[in-house]
Length: 297
Image (tube, rainbow, N blue to C red; front, side, top):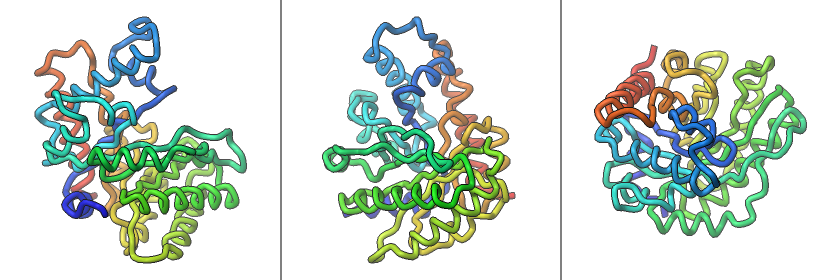
């Protein structure tokens, strides 16, 4: 059964969800943005240790708390690690931040204008372990590059099938069919995605809810029907390559949608900063993203 206090916080809280789930191929880029060059590590273990140090620094910062940060999405290794001498999920919970876990194992090659999720043969084991650690929900990502109805329908179907498996394990799924914001067919893809998500929401059995993580739409307000849908707990937006100022402007145009930013949250943080500099920079980013999530244009 889902934790009802966490459910209420995510459903009604005034804030946003931090995405701290860069993994695999995206980790070197995240570290480079943090001011750590590739010659700073000699193995994957050392690389993941460095990214964990960065995330621990974020999680234990005084400004990273449940007042403005409702939740945080973790990479599996981060979930299994420690922050401030406690398990990362427990450290977050004690700060009033709801923990989520990224469960997808990456993307298949593009077909029909989309990239489906790779198989997850050990998903049930991961879900059980995550639940035991106090994690509230999951996140799983696909990518849509073209306005191909067949491809988008397949992506959404796969997402909802995985979402059903997550719900059965007593966790809340964040369904993330990301539309590539650089696509020449972005607006058309947004519209098809809206239609396919609505079909799948309306076909859900029982009365359980899901969350949606979507690219900011080319047409502001397009996803209002999803915000208002009785089977949707919350709609969150990824920054999708927008820098923070632009992402916040676009987010503020969309009623009822809150941020779930990664790069746009962390883009100004550097390994070399003093604690005061680091906390000041992170606090400023949190304030800006919180504002765009709660005060709409």
